Image (cartoon, rainbow, N blue to C red; front, top):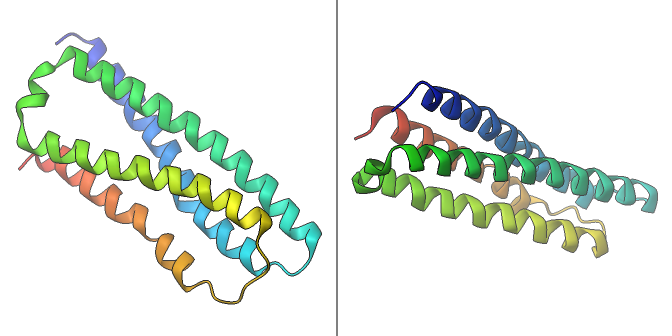
Length: 141
């Protein structure tokens, strides 16, 4: 496959870590934002959320680019069951990423709230994706 395959894989993993760092922290910002009582704090959280979203979107894009490059080198992955499940999890993760974007807009105009139960659950969803994707890629069942 060539020595560059390991370089591609390393970059794929590095940018995946960047993406997930944002996915783990952004929903926590949503919780703080929804509980902020003053307009200045809410505006500050809106700015923080948007900037973090942009950084994690770059991480997501580079993760996908290097993942596609890996797939270009190793087409046989498309015929493997665990890889297909990994792709399904990736589609779910991209939808989660999109939902984060929607939350940024919704919180920008929302009033403060003490009920953050849903956001606290939303905050845990990336863990499921991370475990599923990593375990599939390592164990290859």
